[in-house]
Amino acid sequence: MENNDFAIRLTDVKKVYKLYNKPKDRLFDAFGLLRGKRKPALNYALKGVDLEIKKGETVGIIGTNGSGKSTILKIITGVLFETSGEVEINGRISALLELGAGFNMEYTGVENVYLNATMMGFSDEEIEKKLPEILEFADIGDYVYQPVKTYSSGMFVRLAFAVAINIDPEILIVDEALSVGDVFFQAKCYAKFEEFKRKGKTIVFVSHDLSSIAKYCDRVYLLNKGNMLGEGSPKEMIDLYKRVLVGLYDEDGDGNSKGAGNGNGSGSGNGAGSSDGSGNGTENGAGDSAMRSMLNPDTLEYGTRQALIKDAYITDEGGRRTSTIIKGSKFTVHMTVSFEDHVPGPIFAVTFKDVRGTEITGTNSMYEKAYTGCGEKGDTMEVSFTQIMSLQGGNYLLSLGCTGFSGADFEVYHRLYDCLDITVVSDKDTVGYYDMFSEVEVKKV
Image 1 (spheres, rainbow, N blue to C red):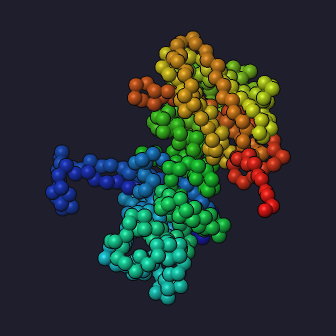
Image 2: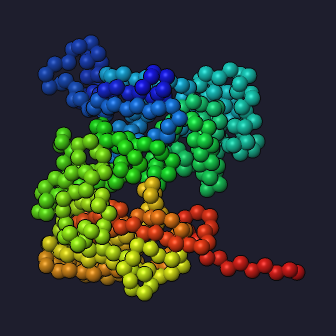
Image 3: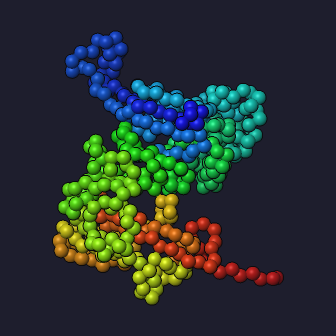
């Protein structure tokens, strides 16, 4: 790749914080006077991260709290400096990180617009041209002429967001900032975000909203405890992230996955559990060849394997097994679950996703208040979810799961991601993901 093709490049970036026992130890350390046990402990927020984002890409960064996401963004924007490694930025950045962090509480809203835009490198003439657009977007009325210390929290973030997103940057950094204000302002924020994508701007997006990650991002990086676990399509990385969330990804250096594998709950799988985090392979595991012939061969499965989903299929309103359903008709999702151990109160779940991996809808036996009892070793349960097909015509993927609680701890016994596909046939599609089946009446009066 030529140098001018990238917007952001991080090479072996590390960020280390020193943790001192006493505040005065920081001063002594600055003069090299700390010895022995008084030496600070080292906390690695980033452990040699490589990342490259091309111009015009929308790239997501996901991970659990404390994984290093915000640290990376602060290093990219210059708020923090890396301990080692190389950071290259090719373009003017606007960051939606800690909104309003640079505001002076004694200044008016308009004065803070000029202050922030000047800090971003804009001249007074450029700011003056942008000012009407910024104030219209913020939509806080005459309060823009009052000191920001008099603002409500909602007004404050609206103005801060308006400043950051309306200065026409080449690179936009977003950290959980699209859900500010009321629902109408949020819709305006997302519309602006999509406008940036259409203009070919480079966007780096950090969010715990996985649906937004799947919808907007071209690629996704997954971080965990300062390490880069993988990089790939939104679907691949989101599926891997979900394993991390429930503790079924063992980051031991070789990427082995706990409880996914050889039938006894102790083996390590391949595919999404591999060291490259690609998430595109199948894993060894439950089920016979008959079941496998009906399921997606690239099904991602994992869990403690105290319960196993042995079979899964869809039937239409006539009870026939099928993968094609007519919109507006009744259909049923079935799964057969066998228990290898005592499982108190199993929870059975089904989720529908589009082909990009966006979760559209789903439910489980707990939400539906269905009594499931306890599963004992050797038991088998037949589970069915029956509903009316309201999704628009198209192709969808189904994920199934058996989970529960062991005391206060949430347990995943067995999950199958994207195990079944379903095609919805429709002669009338409306706007969005599903049809409200509205009855329209028009009267001439």
